[in-house]
Length: 422
Ligand SMILES: *Cc1c(COP(=O)(O)O)cnc(C)c1O
Image (cartoon, rainbow, N blue to C red; front, side, top):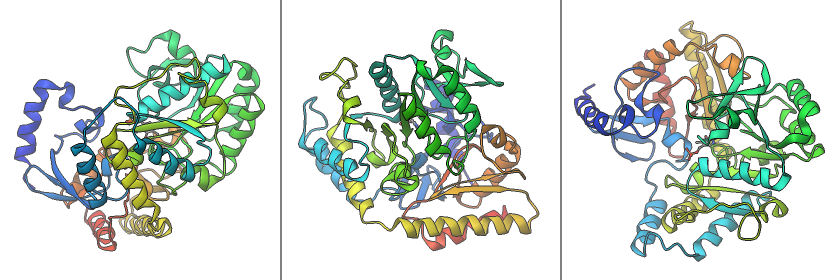
């Protein structure tokens, strides 16, 4: 496989961008080597600058559930752009998109559009603090909620009460207000609530974790989190930036039948264009300015081009057979499991809907601690071997693989065959 042009473009990019990229994982740091520069995508395939083509299992980190460049979306984008890219004034399309979202996710009685998932979670946290008059936030170890200061905090070993910054530049004062609990550990969570419940503004969680690799919630975990937060006047935020419109049209909250107070969306609701949303209970959302005292704004919020893409994307998705996609994802995971078994390689494959991760480990993965037992070096070898056989995997063991409606049975078979050879 020739990648000379990608390599040259990377050298040029290194001059201008830290690490040559505009988002860290793109630099291939955890698999080594030099990233591919992508020139185009169509359906389930992407093409690099050297003309190689790949079956894509990243799909812009989950934003593209229909596949690359679906005609419905590209047509809507072109039309909206020709009418003016931004006005900084209301447009009817925003209400149209909100209505589609509210119908699919009824817990989002009112919402706000922003420009990224990060902005959605950041704003939901501020709103929860403004609404409750409390400062502390609970998040779960290994869950990613964008890069706002208060959410870039990991657990120190067993230190439930003392957040340790997960990034330089996050002040100790801010991280002190973030409490980190292990995912899926309801006893730990119950104890934190018992001790500090009255100081906690909100709990934010990925209902299916997809940023430490895919980790499913244990049976009853989400409903117990819901029960305890409700009992203690704590706002429960589901970060459905990945799971929204993916696990089902109604997201994880529809799948698990657990209703959060606030929901954050992103990725799929923009069909590849920059958008995010947060929303939920009317009585909470009415605390947002101009109705309330929690300030949040955006020059490009509700941007007409992104909103047009979102409407076209969600309308097309509403006609899709999610059960069939689920079955395809089940097939690929079973067949991969068989391949690895035949090759006597220990893997654990976690899957929920069209999200899955192949962990190079022999013990079950239920939280970040067990996820980290996976062999990242082995994954790196697998990644390059798959790339050489035309399959583009996420360049990290701790990211989800994404199937889309554009992946055919042939694509699935090709991925499985490549895995055997890899
Ligand atoms: C991607 C992601 C975010 C952040 O969204 P951006 O658009 O990258 O800012 C937040 N939460 C989850 C669960 C995500 O996967």
